[in-house]
Length: 465
Image (cartoon, rainbow, N blue to C red; front, side, top):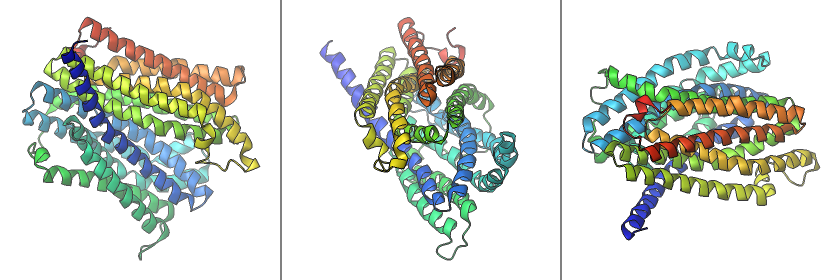
């Protein structure tokens, strides 16, 4: 490798790391908001906690689909900046259509959540818990428009490779959420004690805080203000709106495939008993925390690849993709080592290891973390591959890969191993690992094929058969 080429790879390493770190921390901060809600609601008792879990799962399923749609703003803006770095008008129009899309997808999403009780009863959930969850959801649903608006602006600042603003807003929202929960759930500072409804209102206000904080940053920072994002926001740009949905809907569907497969896994494990379900809850929380690292790096990959793609620089596309992949897999390798070597230390954050009552749950959780060590590597591979391909505006075929891997391979394999081979929850997790492996291999094969054939231009619209 020539000195100039080594220098180029080194520059890419530093650029990807600098962009990834704030994105990873922002993702962890957003998870911390959910954890805060659980801590406060838990003080209301097990029934309220169970109802909130039902409501939160329904909200998350709908919100993550919407998230997949609006995050298409990032690769679109990145490509535009790569093609024409001084093109403020294109960026403004794309972000404006991101807002339009956030509003458009919020309306049916909020209407569905308003009828959350009927949905939960259709899913055969206990009527009393469904009724409590419905009251919670009718407050929580107002979080969706603010959260999606924040995501549009987060995509904008990430595409400009200045994601720290989103991190600062997220950290501020955590503090606001803690205060709002304390005040509205328990009736402090002269407010009425609203219980579970107060928790929903607190989350909605925290999401509004997130959005308004980002708006303030963009209006105050000259580097962001120059794009005049909020100018003429009422003007339609139907071709750009359509392009965003063509790019974003496959991302949304792929996200839904992934979310629902984990929901289905939880339902299957629930048939095995409370000990398996408790162990699953612990293991999935640990895995979710570590997943935030490659997820943030994948978001950076989308931006870095998108810039190079827009500029038509094939060599930079290659470096941006493979450097992000290397960083993400290294991080997941460390997570896998931790899960194999110190599982009890990780589990101790959730359970008292010395209480004999927890012995069965701990034993199962240790076994699940052993599977999760493999799980981490393939889960990292699939999300990194998806992020790299999104930078090339390639989302339709990856969506099909996700459906095939998760539902065509992962769930049937997990069910067979759990109930026919009698591997129980370890079987279901093994099935998830198999499904994720299929998706990861297909994603990376597609990336390598595109790189080998040099098929960069126009691939986001046509795709590769």
